[in-house]
Amino acid sequence: MNDTTLSLIQLGIVFFGLGVLGRLAGMIGMSPVPLYLLGGLAFGHGGLIDFGGIEDFGHIASEIGVVLLLLMLGLEYTANELVTGLKQSWLAGVVDLVLNMAPGAAVALLLGWGPVGALVMAGVTYISSSGIIAKVLSDLGRLGNRETPVILSILVIEDLAMAAYLPVLTAVLSGVSIAGGLTAVGVALAVVTVVLVLALKFGHLVSAIIDSPDRETFLLKLLGAALLIAGLASAMQVSAAVGAFLLGIAISGATANNATRVLEPLRDLFAAMFFVVFGLNTDPASIPPVLGFALLLAAVTSVTKIATGWWAASRQGIRRLGRARAGAALIARGEFSIVIAGLAVAAGSVPKDLAALATTYVLIMAVFGPIAARYVEPLVTLFQREPVPAL
Amino acid sequence: MNIVETPLPGIGVRRELTLTTGRRVGVVTHRDGQTELIVSRLDDPDACAASIPLSADESAALGGLLGGTKLIAQLSAEQKDLPGVSTQQFLVHDSARFAGGTLGDTQMRTHTGASVVAILRQGSVIASPRPDQLLLSGDVVVIVGTDSGLAAAADILQSK
Figure 1: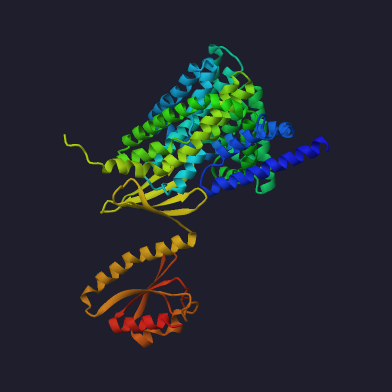
Figure 2: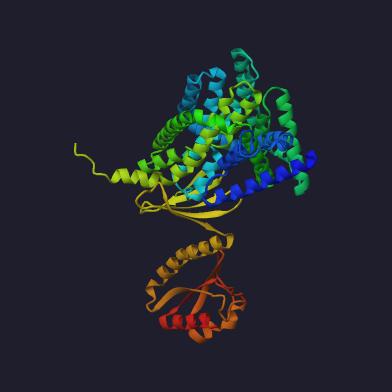
């Protein structure tokens, strides 16, 4: 059997296996991301079966997966929503950032991974999964709830924070000094501001260039523009992901809606590949030693997200039950934590254990997050029914 | 009436009003045009007792039913001084004989003395319809007449 034949067969098995896993996840109403990661762990080095034949395709496919994940994240919110969100909830955003970056950074320092590892783990524990959360809110019929805009505006801010965080991360990972990192922050903030202004004033122009009445040419132009900008951004050391993300923000209105519809299946395919490749490159044997830390991080960052949601909701005059719902909804971490860990692992400037810790952490949080969101209500009611001690 | 509009970033817009009883009732419009009717819970006004996805036709029909309420209230107020005359609304069913026919075909006025003052269709009001006005299934017909006249009118509209 020649190499191509073997690759086709292995790729076929991987995609088919992922399809079955995804269906399984759908049946029990959970996100497929943790199962994709498990699939990658099972197929990779040191796993059940060693699938070396898909590495070439897997590498480029997972890069495209990251570009598409970030492009769609940018498309998710209009420039208007981002600016309004920033104005209205920046304080909640700061609380969210401080409370949820600190535990990740602390554990990384504790494990002796240095400042770079701390920056990476801070990002991993900070970013909630907007994909999982939006789906959970919709599935649980909570779009009409008063706390829902609070949750969504925190997600919007996290989204914007990513635009500043990713270029800094890329700069630090490539080994620049603190001063270089600060310059990267400055450049990143300047670029984000310029793109936001451009998107607000000339968003229709960007959209007009990309737009096409024909689905096929629209898809090609969109994908071409995304990869081109991602590549150029990467060449300028700003991270491919950020380039794609900013393009997503700049595309607006009806074009953005169409783009989401056209790109969704492609994103699902390539992102699945990204999660599998990340799992492939993680040795399952490296998980047990970090399991304790992953559980500790999961517990602490669940509490910190609940605190963030609780505080932000209470500022809007929402009652206790609503505050608890807002907090629990924010717990889920997912795709973007893996994107951050993936960037770090690809750069090779963090220890291998970090991948194992990030994988384990996301596996726990992507599963526990939706469960917490669903069962927080009966739990809080249970506690409230207990007799109040007389004072 | 104060309708509050709340943007739901990444999802769409929520428009709702707070009733005198304190409950919130509103509509979530998704970006792709999908609509959900939301009703807040009694014990926890922050949460929703129901969020019901509606198709375009369903929301138009529901809007029609609700839109008629005000018209009926006005008509009833005007007829307060006319003893024995009242207003009622009737639905034209799919299986009704006159669904697809004109108002004139029913000869309602001739047979019952009651008159059709309005037809509510897809959220809009067709006032003082003429005899050549088409009746479609799903229309709500507003009729003014005496009690016996209204009963006879109902028989005509429901005949198969």
